[in-house]
Length: 314
Image 1 (cartoon, one colour):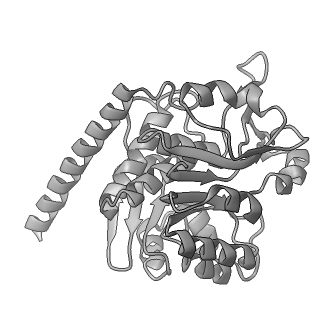
Image 2 (tube, helix red, strand yellow):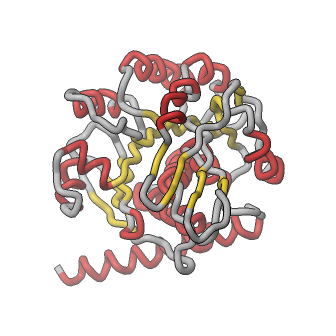
């Protein structure tokens, strides 16, 4: 079995912009982004998802090229839900949103994929259905894998959202959340990055990756906040899915025993490589994998020097 399981949606981006003569379909979705983030470091990864009847037309070529099995992909009699991105309209259409429950990962699907060989799971879901999370925690306890939660809140947060999030975080090893989501959840201004990070220190997750796009990320424990600079290889070409890609990379780094600061560097470096081209990194060659690890080492040395200089000044 594969060491890393990526659960969520396989939902391609449907791009409709005035500059293009026709719609463009790009591979996407939270499960796919996390899968790409893990695949940048290891071949031992698979997606676990319900997929649309047109999945192979969109994703199969990339999957085959990167030796990724479709063992735990279960087809539905519906097209893959499209994330529609237009000049004035972003997100799922009403039709696709109506069908989303048919594609959400459930416990029978997850149970078919997990085992004692599973090192880590990333899952992207909302904070609803506490019973689901409790049963997932039971599997985590049985098999000993790490659990990373990419927070995907519903459009309208429930009145007890914070309470639900706190309960779920007590089951997780890492929480991946972006600044806008954290701002909504805590009712704090989006620009108050340090204050939001300090607030997260009191949440139950042992480790949090607070993502802030091109402005970098914060890696947060109950006792420390480490800022990690964004990694830019060139002018950003496509930042769609960077959050999921960074979550997958963080999953890998966490399970391989890297320190919290390195988890953030892994995440930001993977996102930087993803953003440097249109669509997923392709191909993920052995050369690219070595190059990414070399850049991660460079980022860590740079961060260490910066922190040492700051410490010397104080």
